[in-house]
Amino acid sequence: MSWLQLKFQAPSALAEELADRLTDAGALAVTLRDSKDDPLYDDSAGKPNRTAQRPAGVMDMDVHYEPAPGDTPLWAHTSVEGLFAADADIPAVVEHLHAQSGDESARDYTVEPLADQAWERVCLDQFKPLCFGDTLCICPTWLTPPDDARVTLFLDPGLAFGTGTHPTTALCLEWLAQHPPAGLTVIDYGCGSGILALAAAKLGARTVYATDHDPQALTATRANAEKNGLQTSIHTLTPEQLPALEPTLEIDVLLANIIAQPLIALAPVFAQHVCAGGRIVLSGILEHQADEVIVAYRPWFAMVQKIQREDWMLLEGTRTSAMV
Image (cartoon, rainbow, N blue to C red; front, side, top):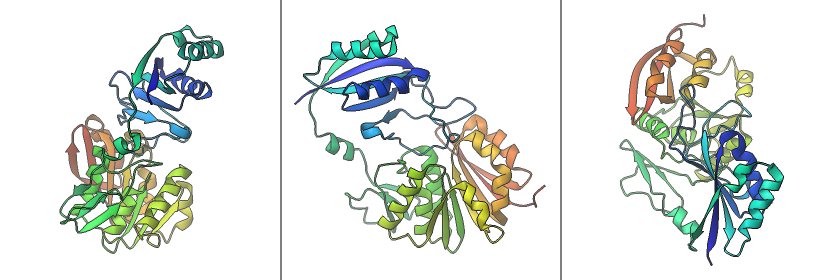
């Protein structure tokens, strides 16, 4: 069997609506793709993300990001692609889209034939075990970890996708592998799939709090914790629930792989959570944003290290002073 891919170019303000209309018109899957190699976030935000696919209504991304609750940022120039059976009446679909929207751009499209493939196998073959430091390996459940992997975390792609492939996540995993939090209490703030929380627990953390605004992220984290036998070490909750744990909550390490502007806004909040002498590890920061983030944290943290991978920075700090 073969397929037809119907493709439109749309500004971000119209991309989601067009994707929904393609689904209503019978598309078997809809993909939103960066059509101009633009970052998903601008200078005030952060991370590039190249593809977002929505079979059955799920956004599939390489790494979990943390925009403001309710925000769904897209690229300024978005390719909206609908997959149809080879015998679909594409002109009729296009007319339907135009009638629904009244927008002439709905008639500006291309159609490409796609040969049938074992799509699930193609997807799975893209993933390999990833190793960090001398100890930590992130491995899909259908593969065997390397023989020299001493600490293995099994994690599959899925909801709240995040398996260590993005540089921001890789920076955090490298830091954890080099600074195992054995016996410590850790927060993974903006946990997504829970990959950092899981890695911290695997590396010996006594207790890990995984927080996120997204209920699907918390569901994914709990499922991944159970898959790895870590359900007793990892506690999932929303950021709003953290204050209920204080004043008994004393965090030794706080990990936050989100984006620059939320990190800046959260500096005093994070300072409340981290104990004196505790460490903060911040990622999701573009190189040119690092100094601004450092300035925001200096009232409470001695920012002691910057590590770069590609265009991304990890910042590490140590809690010093009381709240001001």
